[in-house]
Image (cartoon, rainbow, N blue to C red):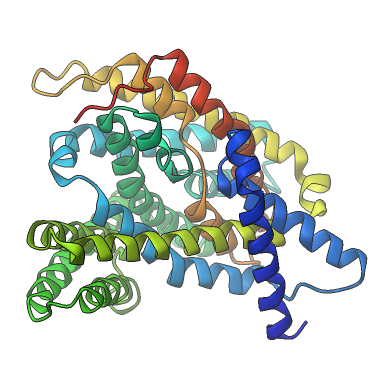
Length: 412
């Protein structure tokens, strides 16, 4: 299919999804779920008429990873309440680093023994699966929190965890993938730990440099459009320099840059300029998320569910158990620390159920080299988990919030 036809097809599907959005809101489904369903049904209808969609997973990965992911990370960091984030930083870091690594390990163990095929699906495949599934994405549900009046602290905990665990998951995935692609090399736990530290904290350092540099640049412009363009440029510069030039975490670099630029813009421009930049980033992320989930629906095939349905079910069960261990175990330890504000049980339940999987899981799953004999199994598990998140977990959040009496309780 020519590129012009592909663009027309995607535009038509996106328009249809927008028209279906009121129905999704009535049924309390996230818009992302409607996009996935529209993309899947639309592509299957085209295939019935022998029309190739022209969308391939190879280009899908690059589009997500290099175009959409920096936008999603930057916007979340740019808009997050820095003061509330700082007050809850210890809890967020505990959830996004040790709890994530624990969840990844539990997922790997459960998937390995669940699939029970050591020759076709060895331990390294199980840990690669755990790394792919580790990143959470609460944005499809937290975007509705202001309308529902959910406590602001809960939203910051979920969005803050998303920010930092995306970076942790991507760094960990890179290390595990390297081990899988170089089985002859003897990589020790110490080597992996050092590599993690260099990539993770190297990204923070680059984010600081780029963020402070563009902070100075932002002072040169007064126009709202110019301010918006400065923030957009800073997002891509930090990601590319960190990820492609220096080989450190591009996600961490974008995160730190977004935090710095958000602090500057929101403090220095309280007039229409600051509002315009916020709206500009809302638009960017709306388009990015819409295209990510629409393309996911187009890429999903019946073959995944026919051939790998059992592996998908094992993966879904594994992440739910692992998430329960990570959230409830970590928050219990956090609540023992005297100088940290405790995480209520109601918050813990929402943190558990609201741990959806989204764009990062898709990007990692689609980046698996086909040279790995188990790549199709891991990718199918990743797609199955994302579908489960959107169509099963997400609709349960509103009833859980109401049953926990968290609706209409918004506070700072």
